[in-house]
Image (cartoon, rainbow, N blue to C red; front, side, top):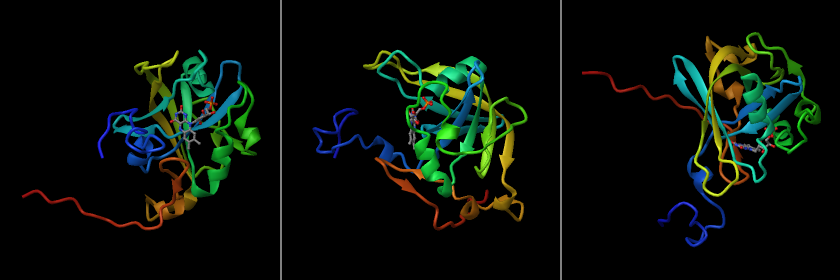
Length: 206
Ligand SMILES: Cc1cc2nc3c(=O)[nH]c(=O)nc-3n(C[C@H](O)[C@H](O)[C@H](O)COP(=O)(O)O)c2cc1C
């Protein structure tokens, strides 16, 4: 099968398979604060780490049909800070609740009954029960092309300025991914859990 982007229906596929092809993907559960002091929390799976040194992450906010930015993007533009909270398998339902389109200023922390915890380098709260959280400062915003929407998508690039890890997921000085249990975003409405881990050594130099 071969087709060009946007032509999946003519190829016999009901939905665009791009998310399913590029899977599994991590979920950045982004908490943010507006300049009015309100807090926001929402999942973004167009999310990843892009650099180890300096440690940097990206996530991207899809275009909306209205001229309004999503609340997360609005907050990051206003305060230039955000936190990436990790969604453990146990927090999947709460994460899903926070993807609802609540009015600006209405807290998803309250809607999903999630406790907030303070951060050290940013004035944005983290999800207290997340197994890890990355405090981030905005580095750059990149506007993506606008094919057919009023707004284009926007890529947010941030630098990690603080790292929280729940001690219970550390074993022998490493993050134990089986205890950590990051939820993976697959295609469509599907998610995955880590059930098997194996190790491969890199080829040695001759
Ligand atoms: C697992 C998951 C991943 C998502 N990933 C993205 C994403 O990468 N980009 C995006 O714009 N919306 C994404 N969404 C949708 C947003 O979470 C949703 O539009 C939310 O209402 C945005 O909240 P906000 O306006 O408070 O920022 C995702 C939803 C779910 C459930």
